[in-house]
Structures are given as C-alpha cells and as structure tokens.
Image: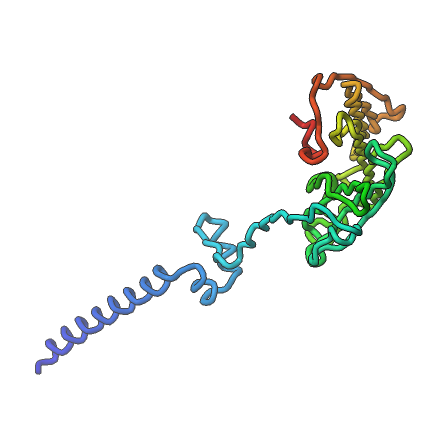
Length: 260
C-alpha cells in the first residue's frame, strides 16, 4: 500500500473516532436526568445551574404529603367522663360546673391526640343527665387550637378553661408570640350554646391591638396603641355586629368567624 493511501485512511479513521467520541459525550451529558447529573457532577453544580435558568426537577419522594384530618366520632352517652375518651386520645384540659339551666354539674373536656401533638384538639361539652352519667351535647374541633406547631413549638404559653358563676364557659389562651391572647365566652341562649363574647390581644413591632367582640350587644371595639411614638398614642374605633346572627359553639371557628 502506498504511503499516501495509508495517510488518507488514517485521517479518515481518526475523523470517525472524533465523531463517535463527540456523540457519546453529547448523549451522556445531554440525556441524563437531574438526579443522574447530581450523582455525576454534584449538588453544588446543580445549584449553580439553577442560577442560570437550567430547570431542575424535585424528586417526588422529597415532597412531604399534606396531613389528612379525620374527625373522630365520640360516644353520645357515658357513665363517667373517661367513657368519652377514645383510645387514641387523652384529656388535656378538664373543668366542671353548672352550664345549662338545671342544677346538675356538667363537664367540659379538651382532648389531645396521644401521638400527634399538632393534631386538632376536640372540645366536648358533656351535660349531666338527671338519671346519672353524661350525654354529649356538642363537639367543637375549632374552639381551641392545636397544642404544638410543627411538633416543636407550643402554640400557647398557657391555656385555661372554666365555668363561671354566670353559667358561662370561658376559654383562655395566652402567647407572647404572634398568636397573641384570646378569651372566648360561651353561654346557653335559647337552648343553644353560643359565643357571646370574645377578646383578642396582639402585639408586635410598632403596635399593640386589642379587639373586643360584645356579641350580645352587637358591638366591636378596637383599641390600637402606637408604640413607635414616645407618648404611645391610643386610637379607639367602634363598629357593629349584624343583628340576629348566632355563633353556635359546635359550628364556628373563633379565629376566622369575624374576619369576613
């Protein structure tokens, strides 16, 4: 074979080799998924790619599923208050007193899920029966918030429920954080347990706000204190609640009921 022919064949072979290598690299780096690229070039390189607009997909198994809320059915009657507590719950707060029109001592329970501190806490109204034992009058899943936020932070610094001498159920929660303080009062009106009063207090950078909802008199009073000024001036405004509107214990969420 002539020397010139060998040179030509060698050049052609070298060209085919370059084309093969170039195609292999394009397939390897251009066709990989983000997860494969992460294994090949590292997470830092993916983060750099994101800054220049290269799309990066999130693995499906890294997305935390939304918590599913399931209501629990409670017994309609029982001899003792413990008879109303399912196996998965425990009593977090308890109080007794005269709540409805008779002179039999009633009970109110706030239950806590045993394994989920962030779960909604049901509040049970148990009315004493003339023949003994209790009957479940109503359950609210919104009367009081969850004990913890994200499983780490208690929502309230303190909380308390009581039945006063006026047959009023008082539920109080206190927090120096953004949740603030809240007092809610419920009373039987025309044989229905209703929200009759609520007071909230919140403070933050620049101000303090106290709102009083006098439902029986259909009035709202808002008091705002400007703490950014040295004399901390206070502004008080008044508004009216709708007439003949009933806020039943078993139906309302105190957090949102007046936000409409």
